[in-house]
Length: 332
Ligand code: UT7
Image 1: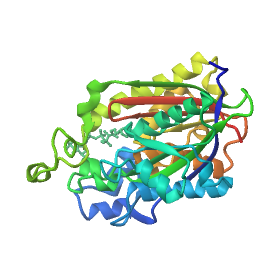
Image 2: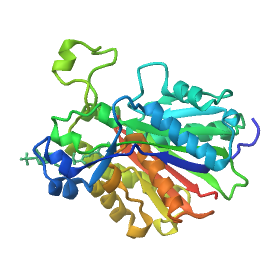
Image 3: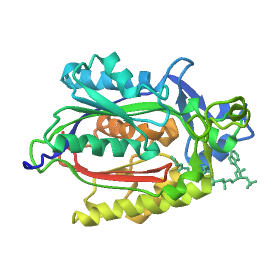
C-alpha cells in the first residue's frame, strides 16, 4: 500500500426548491401553532417541491451548480455518492439518475442510506476513495424530498421536515495541513424503532393495508430521538477534538445536523462555544435530512464565515440510530 492521500472538500453548492411553506400554513392543516413550532424546534419555514420533482432532480441541480462554480467538466467526475432516505424509487439508485442527467459518463456510484448522518457517512466514503489514491474527483451529495414521506395528518412529524439538496466535490488535498483530518461514526441499531418508515420495503411491501395504516410515512418517537441526539452530538464532537489534540476553542465553525434548535444549543453548551461558531439555518429550511450539513456549509462559505485553514466540525445524529462526525481543515 502506498502512502494515504489526504482528501479535501474543494467546492460546495446546494439547491432548495422555490416553494416556501410557513408555520402559519401548517396552522391551516393540523392542530398546531407557529408559536409551538418556533419554540419547540426553531423552525419558521421550510421549502417543499412541487409534484413531479424528486430527490434526483434536486441532487442534479445542486451538482450542476457545484460543477459550474468549480469549472469542472462532468466527465471528470469518477464517482457519485447520493445520501438519501427518499430515493426516487427503490432502484435504480438515485446516483445513476444523477450520473445520466449530469452527463458524468466516467462516473460510477450508488446511494447511501444513513438518514440524517447520511451526508457525513457519504463524505467519509468519498474521502476514503480519494485517500486510497484510486479516485481524484468524487461528488458527494445529500438530497431528500422529505415531503414525499411525511404524514400531513400527524402534527408531531409533518412540521419538522423540508426538501433540499447539497453537494460537495472531494479531491486530493494539496498538503497534510488541509482537508479531512478524522471521522467518528457509529450505529446503534436498537434505536431503529424510534424513527422509521415501516412499509414500502421487503418486510411490508405496498398494499392497501400499508396505505390504510399510514405505513409509508415517517414514524417518530420524538422524545427518544431527542435525548439520544443531545447526548451523542456532544459526545462525538468532544471525542473527535480530544483525539486530535484540540479543544473546542480551536474550532472556527461547527456545522451540526439541523433537526431541532434545542438539540443544537444543548450540544453547543456542552462544547462551550459561542453562537458565532455554530451554523444554524433550521429556521429557514427545517430538517432536510441528508441535505442539512452541505446546506450549512454552502451558506457559511457564501457568508464569508469559512477561510482556508479553519478547523471545522461536522456532526449529525439520525435514524438508525446513526451518528457521525468529521473534523477537517477548510481547504479554500
Ligand atoms: O433528524 C432526525 C432526528 N430527529 C430528531 O432529532 C427529532 C428529535 N425530536 C424532537 O425534535 C422533538 O422531540 C419534537 C420537536 C419532535 C417534539 O418536541 P417535544 O418537546 O419532545 O414535544 P413532545 O413530543 O413531548 O410533545 C409535547 C406536546 C404533546 O402534547 P401533550 O401530550 O403534552 O398534550 C404533543 O402532542 O406537544 C404536542 N405536539 C404539538 N403541539 C402543537 C406535538 N407536535 C405538536 C405540534 N403542534 N406540531
